[in-house]
Amino acid sequence: DAKTTQPPSMDCAEGRAANLPCNHSTISGNEYVYWYRQIHSQGPQYIIHGLKNNETNEMASLIITEDRKSSTLILPHATLRDTAVYYCIVSVLGAQKLVFGQGTRLTINP
Amino acid sequence: DTAVSQTPKYLVTQMGNDKSIKCEQNLGHDTMYWYKQDSKKFLKIMFSYNNKELIINETVPNRFSPKSPDKAHLNLHINSLELGDSAVYFCASSHGSQREQFFGPGTRLTVL
Image (cartoon, rainbow over the protein chains, first blue to last red):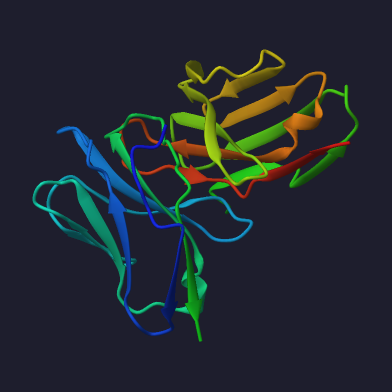
């Protein structure tokens, strides 16, 4: 079962930063935080992952708290195409098994 | 040049029939997966294959039989289809211990 808790839905204005929170209070020392998203009717898409340091790539930034019990995915300049369900997943690197929770349905409004 | 492809995209069939869904990846990955997304949108892993060997079988009924003829293909055969099998099935692949799984576009199965 999913080890993460996310708000079921969020709204964000186009062009603003979207900040998606995730709680993972039972995360183990060797578990990473992964983020995927699923745009309507498509397969999930990898966004970013991290262990304890903050991470940034061309899609997003991942901020992990020092105690690693929560994290925030940041989409710096949200566009309408970022409307999707965002999943926060904790997993051992290379575990070959992703356990998806309910995710957060992010709606970007014009 | 699609990375992970699935056929068919839509499949409508009657209860009791046998059907197959095909998956192919051209990423050179050695691990492939099948996930099921039900009507409530929960996405759950069904199987995982590494180098053509079954690694994960998540208590899936034995009516479901994955077959991996080579590392680039993982097909899903379903016998005696039931109404509850209606769902979207996603294939995915990854390279062993790499961080990310690449998903296919999904196959929407409807059992009438």
